[in-house]
Length: 183
Image (tube, helix red, strand yellow):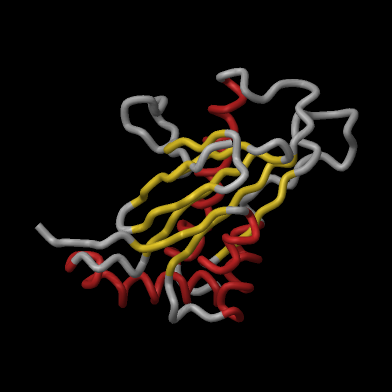
C-alpha cells in the first residue's frame, strides 16, 4: 500500500492503509443526474465514501458565505426551515448515488463482504459536538442502514459518521490544509 494523497478545495487528504482512493466527484466520469461523494477509498476491510464540506476555506467568496452556512447547519440540527431538510436529503442522496454508481460498475455485487462506511466530513470549528450529534441524527434518516440479514441484499453492513479532522484519523485519513494563495 502506497501513500495516497487527494485534494478537495483547500484541504489535502492522506489515505493511510488503503489499497485505493480516488476522487469520485469528477465531471468527466459522472453519470448524468447523479451527484456523487467527493472520494471513494477501499481497504481490505471497508469501502469508504467520503463527502467533504469545507466551510472554513480561506477564499474570500467562501468567507462571505460562512454566516449563511452556519445558519443552515444550525437549522438542520434544530429542524428549522426548509433548507434543513434539503441539506439532509442532499447528503443522503450523494451517498446513495455513489453506491448506485459502484454497483452499476460491478464493483459491488452479490457476496460483497466489506463494511460500507459513509463519512461526512464537515470542517467548521464553531460547530460543536452537540450540534454535530443533532446533525448526524437528522442526516442518518436519509442514509440506508443495510440489511439485518446477510441472506438478502448486497449491503449487510453500512455505517454513517459525521466527522471532523480529528475523528477522520480513526479511519486512517489525515486531513491538512493546503497553503492557499488567492489568485
